[in-house]
Length: 457
Image 1 (spheres, helix red, strand yellow):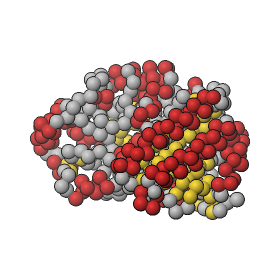
Image 2 (cartoon, rainbow, N blue to C red):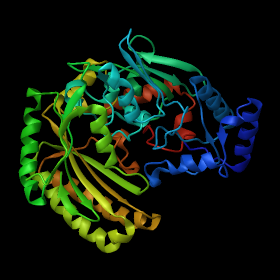
Image 3 (cartoon, rainbow, N blue to C red):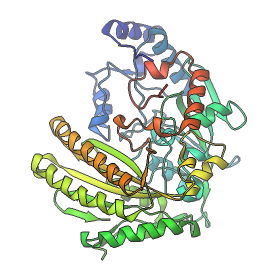
Image 4 (tube, rainbow, N blue to C red):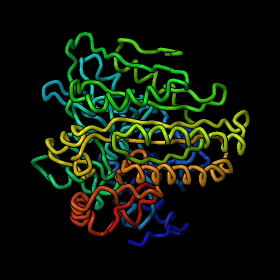
């Protein structure tokens, strides 16, 4: 579907319509302090759009009004979730419904807020492993959590989505009501509706009065890298023996340290509240840089991971010469995460999704790979992009040579150029297209929404 180009006349007409709805007290303009605060709260400067205005809904009814105005005037829009701000009322609340045993989570907050709210009740949910991750985009993209092997992706634990549809109507989607929309919302990114609340099954701690986990970072010297990859392969093969366990191995190139692997030079692991662990992990992902992410998926193959690391070290040398870290703030990551058969099967058991992963895990567990770049300055991002793209293309070519390549791309990690939704497979894509035709027949989320992945028709 052809995107609609939004001009100043359309924007002015939209403003006038908001005035008619007496909605102007919830609209921010570029010269306002709060507008700038919202812009500054983006985790990634690369993700920051510069809109004519920012609408700040406080309820599903507000979102409904906004959607009706936008669609009526054919005005382009973007969707913003948690970011890194901490504002008092912009749909970022979490409530634990003890009677129904559900966590009711609004999409505008961060997972840290969710965990802090749920912890006193002795429960948690399948949210982000770093507390600074926003709720809305994480869930709609799938969401990989500490509990992936035991509970599937975050979206698979959603009992109900409260949403605003393209026509501005408020709807609920669950296993018994609008089930096709509920299923298609899981892994489709922002393509079908605006989420105003997600109702999630909570995970109860064994001792609800002491809701603790063991977790943290183990920091290794680079010389231990190959041994850690071998250990990760073994862990991935045997995670079915303890599906409550989770592991990530990553290489980090940091300006004042060099290349490290996550003989432990530093050990932050501890038995502590999950909200404490996620706060520590979130502190290791500072905001305010420009960012480039690329992802891929491999079979559980040590050779391709070791190759990816070898080439990653060469990549860092090239980047350092191009943009010296003392002035650019250059830092990179090379990360491997197990994706088990149970990640996919839990999704099927919980009503299905449109991630399409089950077809790829039939022959065994997988490795989810992501390489990230961060630095200051648009000019550095433009210089780094071709190197990052060449790197991921080279690694994928090697994976194909080793018969270790899987075409599936994880929406939450993929670069926009990787067209992640086209990799979910024919069956999942057919369900997603059908849901779009049913719930967004005019293609509002394909033509007016300017950010994120679009459904390949």
